[in-house]
Length: 249
Image (cartoon, rainbow, N blue to C red; front, side, top):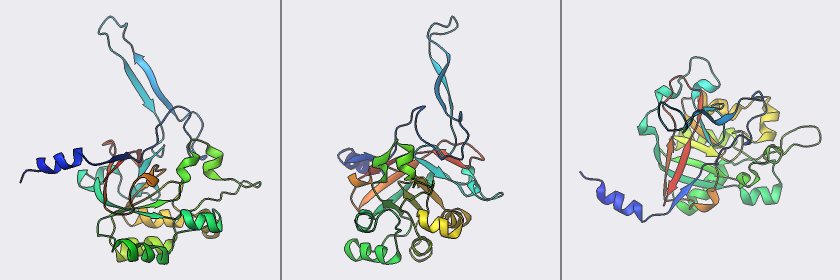
């Protein structure tokens, strides 16, 4: 069956890039050593006698900018990038907004099962195989590293995020394929501090799922009805890779 008619429909749809642009000054997790980023270093230039063209090299952590995490990111022996192919790169997109709770309660808040059920009451059941993104508008703080971490005077982080109960519900009761968020970490900061670990992220990855961190522009896509494409380089053994994430509606 030809899909060309679908392509014609998509040409007239709205395309939204959910990916942050990257430069040598883009922020990354504080645990990554300084000097880990060097983008667009020219190693062959237009004035070369052999051939007039420019070639550049790129050095960056796998967890840099808008990126996808693979299970071996947290646990040795778990699958890496090579275990996930093109069939994992397109999904129905559901966007659950936490912005109202953040405005009312502050940044130390997390999405709950009740929040998800309220979303479903309005938009319908989350489809199996979906990508569920958590909208917090935290991406508006990019590229200010301190603002993204939202440090207090003692260096503690205060960022909204996922709860374990919400993620278990989505993966075990709804059978979603992937989750995503706008913050550096999966877990709401206050829950991570309580657990002494990024327990929510560990749950996602240890169960063979993927996630996308540091998304942007979730305020520009509908809560339901869009398709999301998540693409990454084909590098075997990678624990994480910068991704290009695009929504179509």
